[in-house]
Image (tube, rainbow, N blue to C red; front, side, top):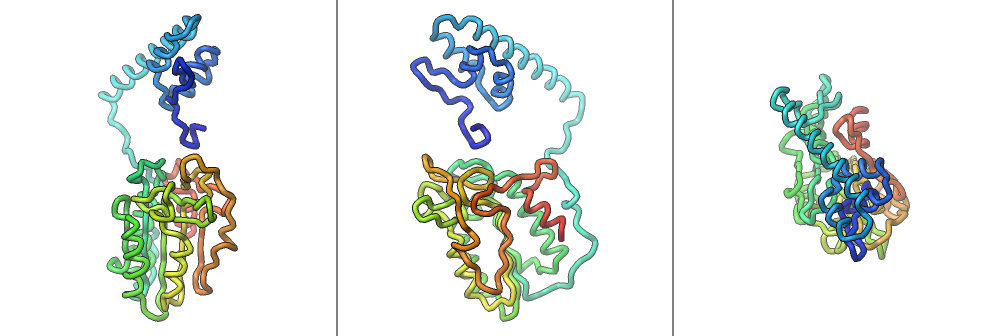
Length: 301
């Protein structure tokens, strides 16, 4: 449940017990430890237990964990003043660009989108920004795309209006006959739970009003299909079922099993590379600091 975004401090019942209160009441020390590691508020759990009768042992148990946590934080604080902290950013092998470079191609255009944080305070799409920035470096420094031909949209620069502007106007005004187009998206996808349509979620998107605030894959493919390009490649480090990973869904709605391969058919000159099918979720590669799909795509390049 926590992995799916459940609130670790959610309270229920007349006493306002949290999951941590219940774990302490039952003496489940492993669960207590896990909940605290995931951000459970010890004080809130103790206050809730104080409203009940016969909860003394549970309160003492949590106080013991509280003292251990305080002691641990004191050691970390003391140590951090003595040892320089390690860099926050994770560096992996794909962050070092290949030495071989393709010939410049003046008729190659790309739109790269990475949305990690959303205006609606949706769950973070981990590593989406790092993925997009690395992808842009590969395009411009390895794969022969001129810098002026590559648009990179990060977080609040990737509004729905930006999707419309660049997918439907900028490309149409610039791409010439026999040109090539590359579209990369790392961020949340979402389904319309009534129609089953798949949507990209812009920075200002809201899964509860996805028809109005999202940008559908169908619309994307239709726009790209109007271009005179010889080759179009779409790479999606996202998923669309609402079941987790890089996907979100309207509050209270159930995840969907979607048939992306048959419901949305790209035109003949378009190739779609997707992190997941309609019943799967997209994952991250924590050790490498990138999305799993993006890491292995760049590793292949």
